[in-house]
Amino acid sequence: MSGRRRRVGLGRTRAPAAQGIRPGTQLPVPLPVVDQHGNRVSLTFAAGRPTVLYVLSPLCGWCSRNEANIAALTTAAGSRFDFVGLSLVSQKLEEYVAGKHAPFPIYVLSPEMKRKFGFGLTPETLVVGSDGTVQKAWQGAYQDRIQQEIEHHFGVKLPGLQQAKMVAEVTNVGSPLNAFLSGVGEPPTDQPASSRRYNPGGKRRSSGVELSRGILENAEH
Image 1 (cartoon, rainbow, N blue to C red):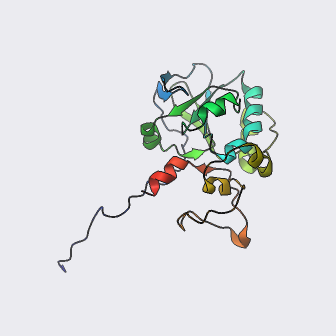
Image 2 (tube, one colour):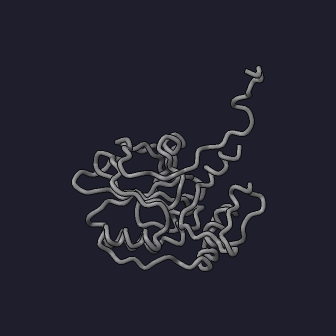
Image 3 (cartoon, rainbow, N blue to C red):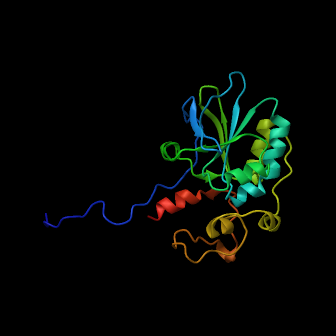
């Protein structure tokens, strides 16, 4: 052996990349959440019909573009499924709820729940059984393959995404990075190179999903 010692654990610590919730994940029942006023709530899932958990953020541009889709889904499938919103952040949530951006109650996930189960992508749509088992999971706004799968699973027809320009005029999409990922604005220059990913030909990303602003901040410290 050379006798040289390796330093372990020094330097910046990066949070693991959020991959989204997978089918088969067992969520706790009741699910501990907080309402928009800061009150703790124990969320249970009704027996006899699945619950749709819609993971969002008031700062998420893709969530804004997907509002017409989730509203149409709730209207068409509300008699067969319960719908609940889970926000990854509390910022601007009261304004978001007051603006009637979602036709269902919205609660805030705790940092502990986000870390333990890997919540961090928005929008994300989960179908959950009464025992807390995730039966279906889609990461991203409803377009292309995801839109087709959701229409087939729920037996509905969705209107599609709002145009990015329209969303930019009516909503605050949050951080410059989230704005860029949503197709609104220019790529931020203050983000690390690993976050500034460009498609060939200079086209913007159109993944339909965002990494939570809080996750990004934690990953950079």
